[in-house]
Length: 127
Length: 324
Image (cartoon, rainbow over all chains, first blue to last red; front, side, top):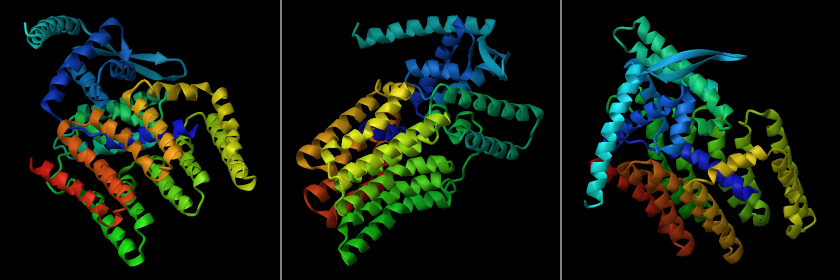
């Protein structure tokens, strides 16, 4: 049993202590893409903060602590709206939803991204 | 742990506010909002079954959060490290000096090499937040030291039990107290049983049967197993399986218990390769490369007296990286 538990717990600790973050051009590029992905996952249903972080971290290799600042920025820009919903025997929960302006912006970003991706793939495939 | 996290986040945000020329209600509301959001997210993460360390890994440390939010105080050159940073930076050199003194004066090259563990231990003591995080993060090092001391005392066959301190301490942070008691009890009974079978009855071949209580614990709380299973879907999870299997195989087949544990370094190394930027990766990897070199020279070439030189790789890489 120790064969499993010992190294597994070590992993958690090492992952916690050895993470190194370096802001690079790649990171900035990634942030832009993540912003679009945040808008996309919220477009289908309203979600709360941790739900969005958890959903994205399963699909994207992304530094999770960049997601919350994106949520705040998009909310300040009016792309997202927050809704406080009361809960039974728990504090009210904040949900994020795409605004009408946000939906328009997402459509535009998606279209631009698809064209860009097609062009890049064309180059990479030597077309 | 939630309290520590929120307290630290609040302190950093308050520091930011105190350093602003104009503080208005909007900024106060923003700070309160951020704290409320992170309190909620922390609780959500814990409720999804993550440990405190995993939550911090997922949400980020308070310092990385305020940095991402653009609310971190700018640090002056030379001020960013403070006495803690200086002590951490000095620890490799203190270790080398201690290693020399132990080696040359007392001929204790082994287990004198254990002083090199002071390097990560110093960093953890000075940087880990809260007693809980410190104790769990330090447990592998305490276990390694205890293990080698037991091996030297001729107790290698039961020495590995000290590594069980890691999951036992880790489990103390679990929210479900009944689960904590059940786990600690099952481990305690199993360890006592193993020691009795191995030492009193000298029946080492049957000693593994002492772990039946731990097996029963996993049958009673299958969610623990599911949590562990979740980790096996990642590259790191596979590194854990691979290094563990290899360690046990090398230990049993060629009696490589002393040095084969180096394989476990593959776990943090994989984490660094996956998560660190290309430039930072070199610096972050250098202590591991140095440690592997140190033990390779020591154990395999019996060169303990000069193997310490491999640790000079760390400042060399840092200097080269700094200049680039």
